[in-house]
Amino acid sequence: MVPRVTYSALVVVTLNLPAGAIYRYASPMISSPKIGVIQQALTDAGFSTNGVDSTFGLDTLSAVIAFQNAKGSTPDGEVGAKTAAALGISLT
Image 1 (spheres, rainbow, N blue to C red):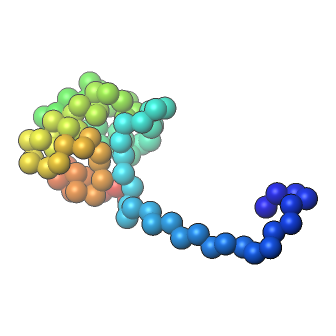
Image 2: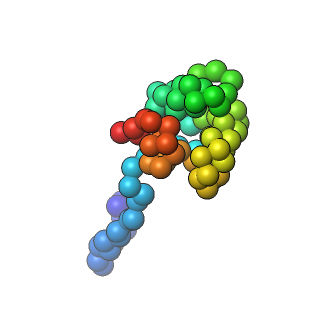
């Protein structure tokens, strides 16, 4: 709430968030220990991320898309539940 503003009624907003985490290339780039797990799984599967630095950069994006193409998945460059399962990892 904003000081010195009178509100006549509160509005409840419902957000439909995706089930689980989704990791993707963004600006600024996302860094997380879980991205390191994703990078290691991609590397172990034969898709180079140019090292494991726990940052979802262009090399990780390219590896994710190549992996998704190889598995017949939609090559959206995102690591959600389906891509994580195909990699044999959990995002939780």
